[in-house]
Length: 93
Image 1 (cartoon, rainbow, N blue to C red):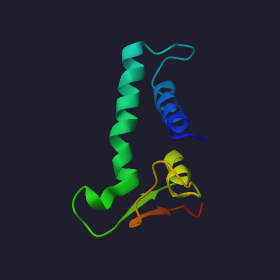
Image 2: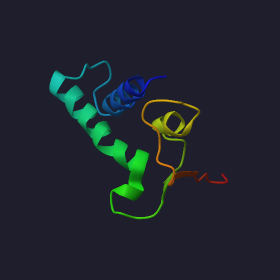
Image 3: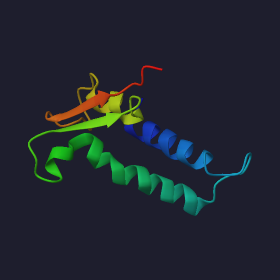
């Protein structure tokens, strides 16, 4: 899956949860959803560089949609920084 495909999927999932059933988003809403996802991507890819820290771990209840893409076996394209980690925290129930 490509970075763009994951971004589109995340943006539309974000919109669907906020629209009335069966409603289609306006162009401005789609652009805002893309902007929202794009703004968060640097924190998933290279959080240590943003505040100037040595390393960072992104904690979530499930694997973020970009997580597998950024930290997988891709040989080219956007990848997570070497010092960017991910932790999936699951509830026992």
